[in-house]
Length: 205
Image (cartoon, rainbow, N blue to C red):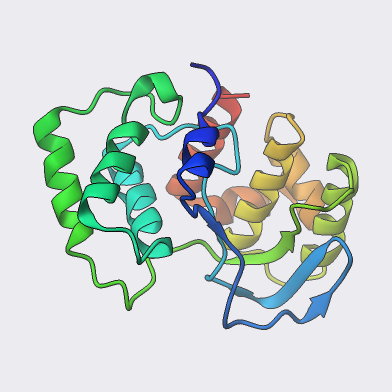
């Protein structure tokens, strides 16, 4: 399956996306919210077309699902995990052995749900009901994040996601244009993790 079977998650009422619940937005618009200092509370699984390609990413996705669905019991979680790792459902690119899956499920199920999983910082969150097209979203992201005096990895990541949402390749030039900085600044601040993420997002357009 080339597309993810999100209907499986929706049918089983599995929460896999959540807006911030404690952090308050700095600015509120019809299209979404802006957090000038950023928020780590936005969980937005399967937002991009990129699939899960590593064990580390798989564990993080399952951990977020466990965290967002605290009423889920062990049997329900195992059922969801088995469907996530089924390559036919389009979530993952590699095969997971039964024993490895058992190990991951055990590790995740032992996680203390009082503590949120590590997450990316987000400054702009568009509503699902937003009627703006991709280019209009990019203009908003560029105009707001581009005002920052210092470009951070989180700023770059936000722009990478939004460029990917348009179906376009992520390039250093496009990132520099959105963030109103030089290509050298992008290279200096991107880091190996973001470079890998950039390659992954571009490879699955």
